[in-house]
Structures are given as C-alpha cells and as structure tokens.
Amino acid sequence: MSELYDRVALIGLGLIASSIAHGIRRANLAHEIVGYAKSEASRTTAREIGLCDVVTDTAADAVKGADLVILCVPVGVMGGIAVEIAPHLMDGATVSDVGSVKRAVIDAVGPALPDNVHFIPAHPIAGTEKSGPTSGFAELFDNRWCLIVPAGENVDRVAVSRLTNFWEGLGSNVNVMDADHHDLVLSVTSHAPHLIAYTMVGVADDLARVSESEVINYSASGFRDFTRIAASDPTMWRDVFLNNKEATLEVLGRFTEELFALQRAIRTGDGELLHAYFTRTRALRRGIVEAGQDTEAANFGRQDGGEN
Image 1 (spheres, rainbow, N blue to C red):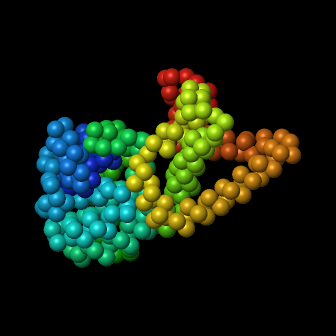
Image 2: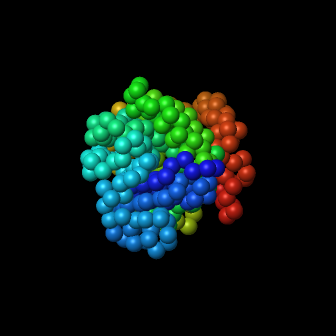
Image 3: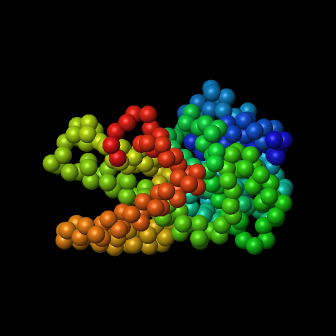
C-alpha cells in the first residue's frame, strides 16, 4: 500500500502505539513515525529498539509537522495532552485516539483543539495484557474491528476516508459508530467483562480457605483467562471505568440480575433453566467464532492444554 500520511505522531508508546508503528512499517503507510512517551524509560527503550524514526522528549515536539496524530495514552489524561499539543498542530492535521471510551474523550479533547485540524476519534478493538514499547506487534489488528467515531456532524469526509484506509492498511475491519452507542456496546463486550475478571481474581486472592499456591497450581484455563485479563494496565482500566460510568453501571446492574437468577436456579435445583440459559449463551460464542473474532480450535487455540 502507498503512503497515506507523511508524518505520524504517536503520543504514548505502549502496546497499541508500538503495534501501530510496526503495522505502519509493514504496510508502508507513512514516510516517518515520531513517538513520545511521558516515561523517560519508555522513551529510552523505544530509541534502543528503533520503534520510531524519531522519539522526542515532549509531546509538543512530536506533533510538529505531523499530518496524523494519534493519542495512545490513558483516557483520563487525553484532555491535558490535547491542551499541550494544540498550539503545535499542523494546519489540516488529523488528530485521533485509541481510547476504549469515546464520549468522554470527545468532551475532553475536542474543545482543546484548534478549528484548523480534523478530530476523528477511533477505537481499535484489539489488545493483550502486555504493555510498554516492546509489547507491540504488527499483526495485532489483523481481522479485528476498529470503530471510527466522528466527533460531530461536520467532520471532513475526506479525512475520515483517509483514516479509514489507514486502519484498513493496519489490517483492521472498520466501521463507523455514534459515541454514546459505542460506549454502551463496549461496556457489554469489554468494560464489564474486565471488571468481572478483576473481581473474580480478587475473590480468589481474598478467600482464606484457598491458599495462594492452590490458586496458582490448580487454575483451570477459565480462571487463567480471568487472570490474563486482570493483568491489564491498571491506569488504563481505572480511567475507562471512571469515564464510562453510566453504561458500565447499567450493564453491571443487568449482570447482577442475571447472576441472582442463576444463583436461585442452582439453589432450587432448576436444571432446566440452567440448561436453557447455557444453551442460549453457547450460541453467542459460536457467532463470535463464525465472525472470525476467535478460533474454534480446542482450548481457544492454546498449546498448553488444560480444562476450561
């Protein structure tokens, strides 16, 4: 694919940003990649591994001359970053992000940006529990969805099309979604599941009758999946929950109702209800596999075996 941007600035150099950098090089999507991270250690690592063509010591320096700027930092600090970089943005540049929450990002970032740039939020639905400049890989976005969430009705269509082509060049499937609907959908598919995983691992850690060695040694793959999710970046997920309160609390309320119903069925021995419920939810799993968003290989494609 031919170059879509001359200079891409990545603000934040964690998993998503480093994967974007690798993906840009794989598909030749930009002439130059510039990166910035708040942590001096992350900047040093990024320089040592050659993650970007240039790693700057300030966000302001990183965005100078960039025709695409992507905010790859926790949602809670995006507004402050926007204020910092605003005076240094190139006329006509596109500013985007990779945050898991969209309404809060639009409200925090949009007002800080000048009128001569295109603000087009986005959310690549991809990731691992790893973080830092060395965690990225070019294949992270392959066949995963990236949701583009235009901030308002007057967004430049050419700029949106160009950003769409960029994410498709990284390997993503792309769709456009309204910000509030995005936050509700992701509260179901990502945010609430992460909170449940954190809670289940916390329960295991607090349960006095089960020792830490037993939790570690006898973990079936279902619990290991919880621990993998719960190993995700604490700062990022703190900001996600604080900035998507209403949708997440709505989903958690519904989850609690469903959990109480299952609890009652177990207590009363209602096997028919349990079987019907598990059959219905099993069908959703099949839909995810058929959509190409996971594998039907045994044990989720793992090589280590073990029970679910």
